[in-house]
Length: 118
Image 1 (cartoon, rainbow, N blue to C red):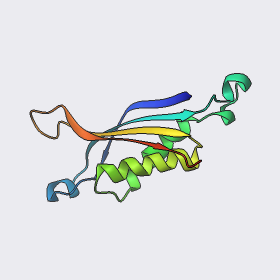
Image 2 (cartoon, helix red, strand yellow):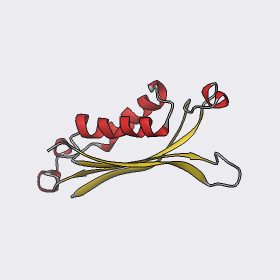
Image 3 (cartoon, helix red, strand yellow):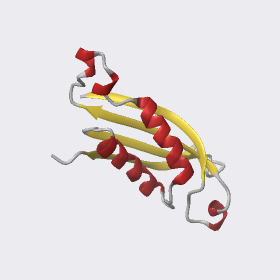
Image 4 (cartoon, rainbow, N blue to C red):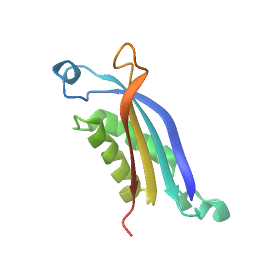
């Protein structure tokens, strides 16, 4: 499995279930790992034969701006679906973190893994 990744994508978005979270943007950090079984790009040296992390980056920017999720789980699932359906990933791991949510905690969040249907 070849893994393409983006780590530490940081942006501001409105997400959460508490009233204070729904009226102002907060920082969310995303790590994405997307696997392809032996990417053809290793042989062809063509971006069309792998996952273009530039394209993934652009989609993450749009997602931060346009999503309708309240839970980090739903936000992560949207990212996982995008990578599998739109970018052809066979396997994904998505980590979404709210850093410094509590003063005595580095971060809270969720990690999900998904596989494409066979």
